[in-house]
Amino acid sequence: MIRRDFSERDIHMALDGELPADERAAYDAWLDANPEMKARSARFTADRTALRAAFAGVLDEAVPARLRKVVLGEAPVKAAVPRSRWWLAAAVLLVAAGGLGGYLAGVDGIGQEDPAEDRLAEQAIAAHVIYAAEKRHAVEVPASDKDHLQTWLSNRVGLKLVAPDLTANGFQLVGGRLLPAGESKAAMLLYEDGNGQRISLFVTTESTENAKGTYAATQDGPEAVYWLDKGYGCAVVGSLPRERLNEVARNAYTQLVNGLAS
Image (cartoon, rainbow, N blue to C red; front, side, top):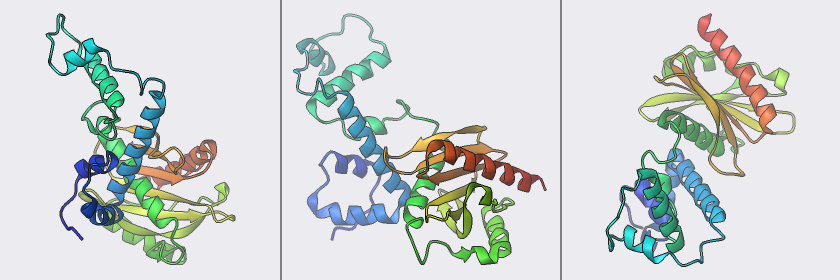
């Protein structure tokens, strides 16, 4: 099996069918070992599907000769073309040629959300996908040792962490674990309802402006309700109806903020 360092560029190559066959096994192993990149790959795949669906009516149409000549540099541009229109023209050409894939999804600054918000949500969803499905090893410290869990995670993450009581929302604490989060650390708290449905709370330090929102890496996958506030970032992740997930997030957020102030 080929062994080398992979990067986001390889994700785009894999999506476009350009990754060498003899590197596929090593690439898949790299994704499994890097939850953040695995979530990013899922997101790019969803973007690719959505883009192809949006342009389904024109994929088989011939690219206008005038546009092809301009993009390929075979004809002079008679008037200044605004940058946004240039990228639109390039997008049409690339879709028609079947080579869009992960390329546009990876262009810096084009139609992307704030990187810090993206990164937080992707890390939270990746952790949830991996550990929420685990039966015996989902957490490192069980809820039966809640005091130790809170103290341990607070010391390791670098902020006072109180495990929210979500019984009013129908969820009981299963436990928690410590996770890497870029150059820092994150705490993940796992909860479960009476039907075995699980949600997770992902908390890490985040020095950025205040923000909040929702994020989904794939259309049918779990969703994250996140916020960045008071020097930390949090995300509640689950596959619940959005209204219920928002209710859980508001409850968790209130208790976390109160815990920081106490």
